[in-house]
Image (cartoon, rainbow, N blue to C red; front, side):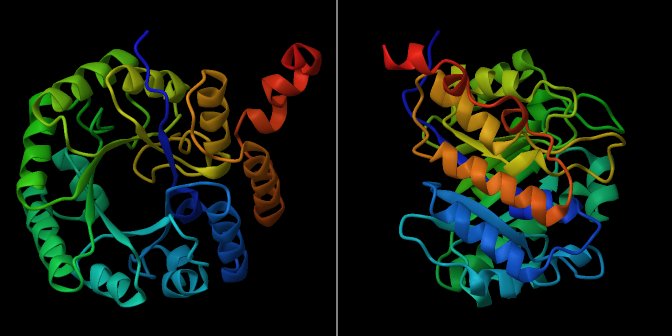
Amino acid sequence: MRLPTAVNVFDVGCRDGFQMEKQFIPTSEKVAIVNRLARLGFRKMEITSFVSPRAVPQMQDAALVVAGAERVAGVTYAALVPNMKGAQRALETGVDELNVVFSVSESHNRANLRMPVADSLKNVADVISLARDQGGKPVNVSLATSFGCPFEGEVPRERVLKLAREALAMGAASLSFADTTGMANPRQVYELLGSFRDQFPDVQVTLHFHNTRAMGMANILAGLQAGVTNFDAALGGLGGCPFAPGASGNVATEDVVHMLEEMGISTGIDLDGLLETARYLEKVIGRTLPGQIMKAGKVKDLHPLACEQ
């Protein structure tokens, strides 16, 4: 099995996870979780979203969250931006990276962003240009529904690759392929990312999996075998998709880190500290998180004598 020796796990729970919570999470608690995570060894975190407060009330305090974040050396603080207005607001706060997203399927893009894909591509180009003009901040472009659309089914691989090429031609610093609705399977992941990396071996690419059908971890393994070394995950497995009935959240950060470390793949992340932060998050949102390690414990905790030998 061909596997890397080290990978990056990027936590997106404070954005992708929190945005699905109906009860408003106090800003002070959001900041506390961001700052806890920043001290655990993450190289990048997506900490908020500069969407319209009317559309997503949970994100109305985006600027305050960024202002309250302790800037730990070596950590990239990213924020999602849906359009030029959001990008301008984000840049004014001094975030390190912008993440602009569009769906590769027309139906999902119109449902989620209320515009055709062609208009979203123009929006991507405008955001990249704005970021370049205002300090040269990098822009990551996320291609949502890369592995399937709840309205159209599987999206042709060539369409996904074509839109990825267009985003790179516009000046995207990096790309994310997102399984927004949890429809991906390992073979599909391996083949899409294999094709992409054959064409763009030097482009930084991240995989973003939701665990709706319990295939998230298997899809990460397929990504690893395809040569991918950057993966998104959400603390506790929070999240979902408003346009995919029954969709669950992202793969849980603590589960991903645990699996990788058990496989001998270094993440550089303090797993015990991560579990402590997940327990803190449970108290904040007032319910049990869906992540597995929180329930079952680490493998090494179950076999202390074996680990000492």
